[in-house]
Image (tube, rainbow, N blue to C red):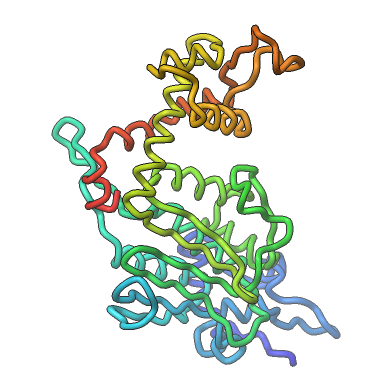
Length: 338
């Protein structure tokens, strides 16, 4: 079915486009971004045009191109504390949804630097912002009956987007600078307006922000025809064990930064009476993560074998924020959500 081009249909988007770029959204720009296409000697609006149109037209053609936000009481869906349907233009949906999340999470004072207070959100807000933006730009708009859902619970935040993960994107390797686009017409417009970052940079922003929150678990999974990410507050015992392990890993890296050491020498410098199975496990894990390596790579069982730190391990040492969090009293971290 063909729809006609009417300037009033995208007046809101046109005003927004001008406010960001200083450019008038004229016929040539519509053609350049493929918001309109020539067919049988006439130009017709594309689906991207219709998604950017004013609410009445967009909601008529794409009634599920919206975000349902909810703040639930407790840790499971049930009683609402707050609820909001965001069915504005898809250009502004991500920002409105992000503001909804901010209203329902808290800030706490982490420490003071001189006379200045340092506030920290209980969740990584840069990562949340990027996940919401990705949900809007990468969702599958062809799926009927499905909208984006954002659920805020006492102990977690869930963001669910219609459409499974693109096969070329691997959330297990978020630092690789991956870039793939489902909605190839919408993406350049979002980039032009500064809503999405440089190609492949979004996942890096997410992982960098997550690294500042060892008390949180970040999970993702495909649920039916949708993709869901969850930010989950770890239980106290689980977090304590992880912080202790991470602290010991950093101690090993600091020792190896000074000089290569054998397994026995590392054990002695850590104050252990003998080489523990736990130490062996940590050393193996650090090797698998490419944080340390053998000095004699072709003879792993050599009596002169030692470990040395890698460039990857040095990078971890330079990311001092984790050590800073470990130094914070655990009860403070737990009670303030960060």
